[in-house]
Image (cartoon, rainbow, N blue to C red; front, side, top):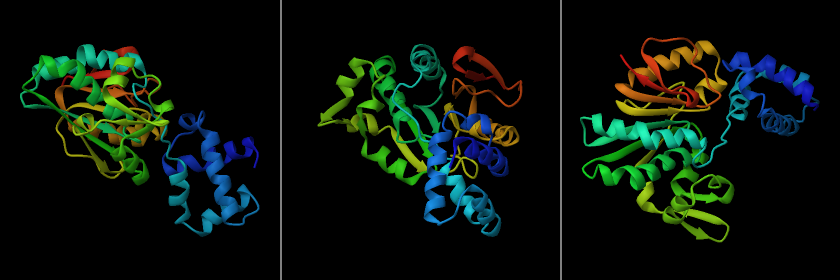
Length: 269
């Protein structure tokens, strides 16, 4: 299966699943490998026959959609984002929160790298200044096997390569070529298997990270629908964090840039 033919196939198939081709441009080889494996498994001659198979077996679209789930993640991904969360956002949210906990939601958490990064920041840099407050992190993902990995808390060196040395030494135990996150940093995170298109945690949340998922892979109409639901779960004054390549599907008076280059927004109404 040639790369060009797979691109043409994805450009045909993705809109039918309410997804957008630009989001898959850089990860297309991963998706194409999965599709090629499925075609071989079904003993089909190629993509044209797979199209016919999709037409004759509507349930196959669910299988195809599963091939389009991307789980690229690592601790401290986009250093400037987490630096701003540490220095500004979490500090202000802790000061303004009228509850005992700063409540956070990480949407599309993969194997837990993002929510655990938040936990590390809180316990190392914020907790000493706010001893009476805790952080409560809800992390959701649609892939059961990724959540299973998250609960184990074992990571390869590639997952922690951007983590500051001080945090790495304090929070991880080296086990051969793996790094085990200490339970003290895992206890603040609760994992739920949810597909954001069908279900979201109820909230309210002071901080929502929705990076490299909704505003990367889904079409703009679906993005807009999900954005409205996400904002109902974010408190006024709370922060919404997108991926650095993400864009809001439309301009909304409910949000203002908090750190524009990092795609961090504050809810103002």
